[in-house]
Length: 169
Ligand SMILES: [Zn+2]
Image (cartoon, rainbow, N blue to C red):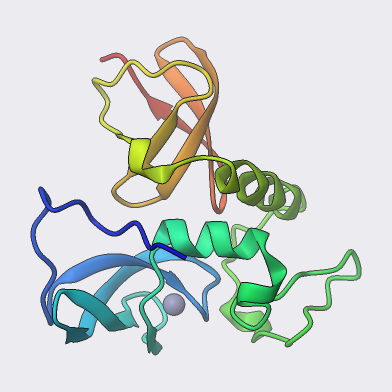
């Protein structure tokens, strides 16, 4: 699988810099500090939220991989309707903002993102005027799909749920 990393136009990654990565403990894309590099490849990162150190998993890679169970069965355990995860991640590590609808939104996100080429994602900014269906890349939330527009805001589906963001400003 090809990892779609930060574009070369962005600041080159190096140890000590921040990057976005899928956190295997928090189960979401978060800011991480790079702790190990192999050439120009980020190898290992530390989560700024939970402090865990783990292999770098790009936002796009994790979302796409989550859609193919064999690739990441361990990294992204499926949560059944009973709420019991296959590999029992620490319950206290779960973000407090988790809503009942979040699981369905995550599945929808992973399904839809798997069909998209994240290399075509537009960088989100409040000035952006995206169309419904557009694929965006947000500095904090990762890749998002525009689901609806109106009133200067876009309803965007991110890996951790739907957010309303300002657009067209
Ligand atoms: Zn974490």
